[in-house]
Length: 223
Length: 223
Image (cartoon, rainbow over all chains, first blue to last red; front, side, top):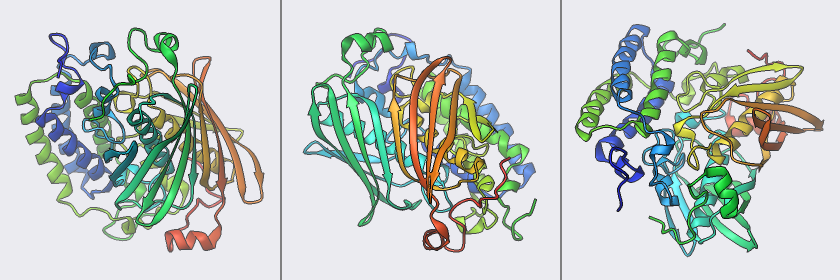
């Protein structure tokens, strides 16, 4: 695995045991803030200690986007994915595998992802589909940017319940990639999605992203 | 403002200065984990201290969904909204106002919400629309659950850049509510959305949510 220029860890080197431990604890922290009963004085004391920890981390030079030159392939983005990202504390996270170019992701949503009491927020369902359909496209060697995404909500999706999200590329017409997916709790499909993704090409990619490739390279291997 | 049964704070009493301070710090923590350069030994030490803080919060009995009986109105959900939620560290968060039944939300996305380098993840755009369109419906006294949501991505939405998200109910046909929205960075509209929401009625609400009302009460005041 290549590493970034001196002084700037790339996305891969950010994936260390200690940072992953911090992510796991931060997920629990986000949850506890939303759910833990506590005295105001205890919360104040906790906040003071947390402030010290955060300031310690922030005292190191933050990595600007420009400092991540190794983030060139789709696999390099995935650690910070809002759905499957091991480095992203807002991700539930889901685990996934690809078989026969079909994505199957499993996981559950918790307090930070709640909409109506006891159910997943519809926005998180939409977010999960956007990411899952995109990964399915890469898995099928049809990477693209989302042009249009439609979610059909069949019924509420339960919180803190194992879910299965499936996604696959249905067909490719020129630069347009048609992709579909569904989420189920057990045998019950709670939501479905269809997306049109577009391979934006090198020129538009340069306009949007400068020197960086905008879309994953077609030869991009999945982890 | 009413308070919950003895021993269980309601959503409103969770909104305390210390808890809000914890949320703000947790947002910075999520960001720092994704961006701060740091030695593995320092990260390990930080994780050990964070573990102690999290365990302290978790040692208090967590509030189950059933322990939030006061979360009856849409305004009671909003503190944990993934877009505007003051208690939700995964929310960017956006601030918003409603004038003439039109929602105008402003804010910016940061590291946890990144898709392609330097741009907002398309999934977060979808999430933002779902929430914003829903709030706009409540503002127009047309609350409903999302049945279908379509997002059109016009071009990438820049990260760490002030954005304006507008949403409004376009028309109501029986129990179907048609709602639209758009996100702009300056004069540039980067994404548009249209949603169909459904007032599910009392019977379906009971099926989904038990004793709780599934949808905000039509008379629900906005904060």
